[in-house]
Length: 68
Image (cartoon, rainbow, N blue to C red; front, side):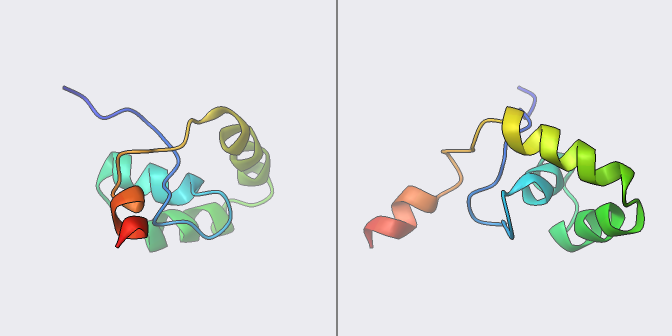
């Protein structure tokens, strides 16, 4: 089963888009954030679109950690 692209609830700085992309492609979130910074201003519009269209990942352990 392939991974579905979703926003991360744990690895997030603003909306979790970079964390979600990093989780999907199995790379560190720091590298994705650097890529977004170095490709500004084009990545800004891409980020806004993804932040508003990607669903939030509800299966990443956030709920279980919150209950403890």
